[in-house]
Length: 83
Image (cartoon, rainbow, N blue to C red; front, side, top):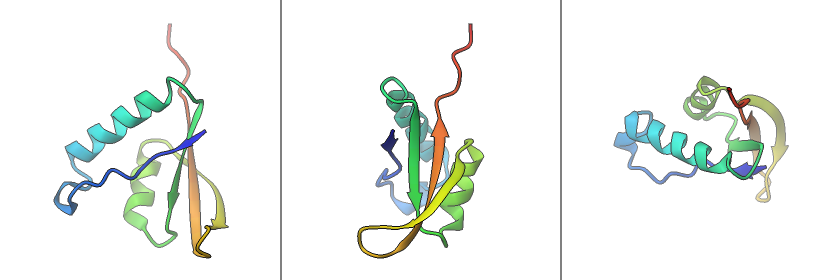
């Protein structure tokens, strides 16, 4: 399992095709080595939560991070290989 999501794009590019393509590439690369990917998001960050739900990630748990902040964790598992 690996965490991804920090893409450092300027706000003008959030949610657009560049962000989508960057996430697609990161997921494609991650799934060559791991079977699942997690996204750690602030509970009030509804935009990011909707975005990861849109690509199929499922809410896995709520926890407190190392700085004592509540976060939600979404998980996306590797899709089955089609033959």
